[in-house]
Length: 343
Ligand SMILES: [Fe+2]
Image (cartoon, rainbow, N blue to C red):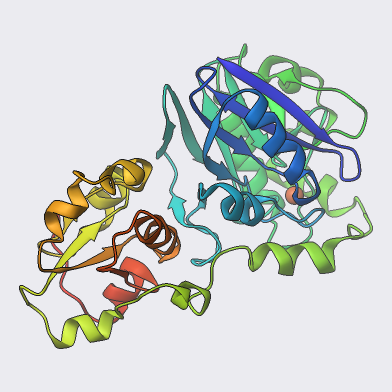
């Protein structure tokens, strides 16, 4: 496995680069906007294709590089389902797997620092964001933080992992790089408490100043998705337009989400599955799209319209001109009352 812990000095943020091999697919956890160029250079040096990028939570102390990396590489942006719907292209819930070639991370909903905080478990290690830090824990006094939620996330989830699990936090201000569940259980001063109430008393009396970048970072991070207006920069077919002529032989609907999303949310009836991860190949001269597109318009959809906007760009670049996508994606289809088939 290829594993890099990258540091942003200004915000003391750790970013993690994961890949199963040189030349393969890569994933970044908690990237920092100012470091975008450095990530892209490293990806190139290691011959990696960035396919997914995710944030453990909405950060208040730095602007995320999710949007800039998506714009540079067309990667999929991932966060927990409690995040606002149009911030990322794919949202996961507790227990879901996030996969790239050769690697699987399991999402653990660990609210408390913020309500949409997630940790991600991968084999012998866990990426804890700001839920569990080395000899500390993330503050709980803004962004719907809650010390009682955090107590349960810590004591009922993270500290129940095997003692040997390596802890990789979202920040460290002293230069420590990793820890273990065993060490934190025994030596983290905030975790030497007998009850949630005792923990909340500690957290409620920290009296910390707001992060200097908070007023910039939070709104910026809430805007990192491709909003529906921007999704209209490529050919579109709105959900209500489609429903007005539904059903029709004049178009073929194509679902580019991942298998797990299709099973969880259902599909638009009659849609063909062509996952975004292989979209380049489907657009080749003898690929799936040219076959399906004989005399018909191809209508792409994903969860919220971000991946399908990028996929429409790819198809257009490959010379396929009868493609459009549904702005707002499956979420818009459902809110317009479109029929859904369960798999
Ligand atoms: Fe944070």
